[in-house]
Length: 135
Image 1 (cartoon, rainbow, N blue to C red):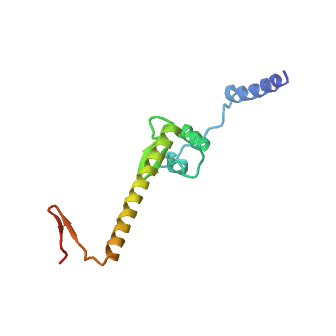
Image 2: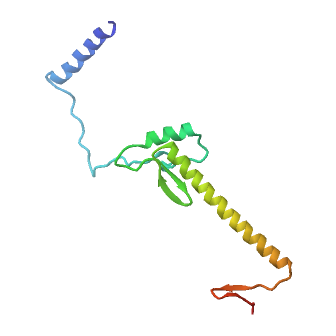
Image 3: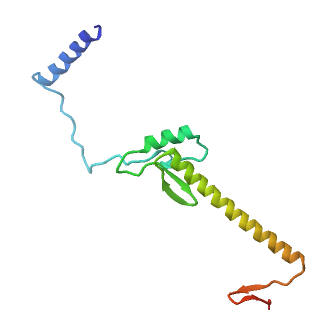
């Protein structure tokens, strides 16, 4: 009830400007080439690995604006679009599993090479035909 009289006074002022003898003051014409505001995304649209699931979910919702790309995650040097927290967790788990397999294979190869060298064996070359003696 208290707001209505104030709103009425404000509206009368605006209408007086608009419909009065002088109208609104003239604006200034933009000189030169037109400009626009480019779309720059927070964190470049990438989900940060240190965020908890609540923050990830909020970021995904905030970044959703079709037809533009939404939130993404950078995994293995590849930028992947993410539409839900569940999808993000799945991608993260799959990448972690792949990393564990790769690390295990690399570790096994280095252990085998070290063991092979510790036996005093000469280095062997592998080919399609099988092992060959080193030259």
